[in-house]
Image: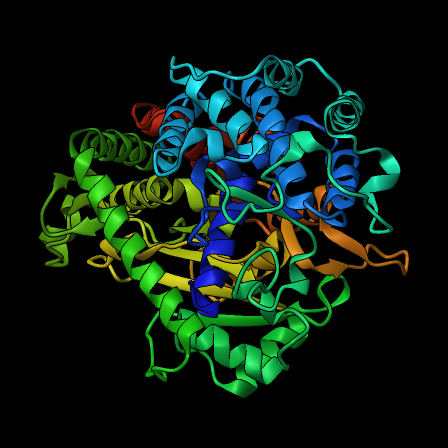
Length: 567
């Protein structure tokens, strides 16, 4: 049996799988799938996400709730999810081809698990489930004529609506199990029909079990985002700061200076929020603090995966660096101003020869020298929220390509990421302007928590205002899907959820503010197709979508060249 800490980790993993499949990181899933040992199941959580994506889950949830309150309701729910798996898979597989292999692997697991028992001794729900997955593998088992009819009705076609799915399941329960709508409530189920023999002795379930209900009612569960989400509303600001410090690194600023920064930035829409700036230097932590130890372990493992991903594609990545370096260097040579100065060597200035003859001035030559009034700096800001979990390696590789290319061009570069835990937005700086030998530090990038994009852009503005450079360029790598648990006041006096329209509007206003201050802003879009309209609203035309690393140098280089040319 998993410990509470391990259960929280698996719940967070299940939620991430559902987010990825549903393509909606604002979800707070009410159902998750776990195997018999309590570990999150990859395939069935993907199916749960597909149900959220393609169907009206609240309609389906009502029937699941009714089953949960009935004796033997777990068996009814398992039957329902077998039917939902059939239709959700067919709806999702076109968008997610990897589901084919995941489904076959899951089916093999169900069939293998059933080998431990005599098939005839299995409860009817498990015989139906076993037959469903055996047929996926091209195998067949004998069912009675009555069971064949149930399975045919249970394997829902994908074109059914949510209401039709619920109605069809109700008919199955009524026609074959004698369970009517009233019997799905706690007030009195009579004796189960003879056909249901074996249901009451059910001590196991083939495959993963999809658990429904309010996770907060289970003491071993701590909400949709695992350990991190427990912080919201449960820790004081001081406790939250300590937790964020332990997880992400020691603060860059003292308490008084940080308080001044928060007073300036954490106002109006972000009133009550906290900020934490760090270089990622970790302090000592108690061995009993399992949440922090787990977070650090996850970050270390992700850093290793980032480096491996870059090395596995080293040829394409190095080629992207070479091409981007060439594009940016040529642009700088063309656009940045040069000045002619007097010199003792260079091109002879015939007009100044008399100065050597009569005044003994040997500076009668001229040479070009780059002026300092057109200095350029580039900041690269990475969205470090959990919505990036499925693409952390590619984001880290793209950030490294940017940093390395600009460094080779002699351009000062700073790379940092942001994520939000509870009410605190953490900003981690991987390398600063003068740290030309620290580009590899960006491989320490790891995603966690939520993303309050508007406040992160304000933090970026604060950092940019402290730089000596005249021409400033901010490049964000983001999925453009703002989402945070702390609500936002849009000015109406009624707090709204920080996602969707409210989050996009807030982020776009902060980008516009940066541009009014003279900062050029562009985005390398890392999200899904459905979030592309949000990206365009936030960043306008200065937006690049990378489908392949082979496109990176040209696509990103084109926008950088345009922005430098407009400075």
